Length: 168
Picture 1 (spheres, rainbow, N blue to C red):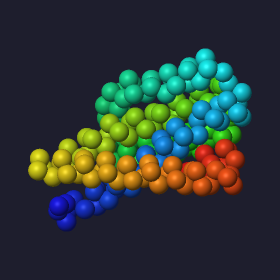
Picture 2: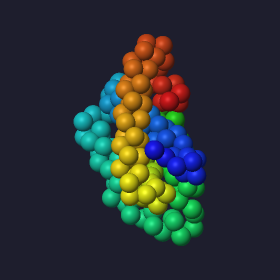
Picture 3: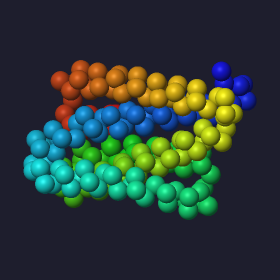
């Protein structure tokens, strides 16, 4: 399916897709309970944080300006790092302002990666390969989401929120 010369970029995208999915899935599964039980937020504050989570999606077009400075591969890796950093720090800031900040960092990482991911696939694979690469990466993401949910369910009995966010 993937030509030998494209195998390294394909592996790179698989790893980053798994990381992206695990990060987002962890945040989505743990967030509401963490916000209410640990941070003591009410519906209005949770709604505000959820709204802020979508702002980087609207701003993802600004990645074009970042590409003037950095290569797309570097942006993709840095985006996953941002997603992971925002996720890992979430458990350490159980307040509305803390969750706003960590959610914004995490969301910028996720949305910029998703933008760059599509661009990298379209650049590196032929028109025949592109749909297969997209579908395989989506399949891998779905499997990673299911595995993440299962692991969080099992480990949730042993870990508190802070370490759940940090570990994943």
